[in-house]
Image (tube, rainbow, N blue to C red; front, side, top):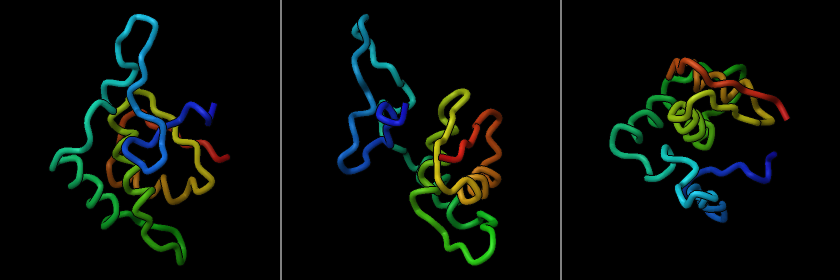
Length: 101
């Protein structure tokens, strides 16, 4: 399952848009990079997250959380669920799930 995961525009990442049998992109939310509003969401998640303990802000977590909110019923697989949850708490998405790996 993790082999099919993509972080849009990350160095070395597989393209977010892959052709399906019908020739349509699978993920319309990943079609373009973030606009100004998207970058503001990343900054808000980074600046306002109530991180546990001595944990420092993590720009990757702050990017993943808003990216997941763009997808319906998103699941984030992470070794740091507390950090992701802290960023998601700022954004308050309706249906994003976090799974520890």
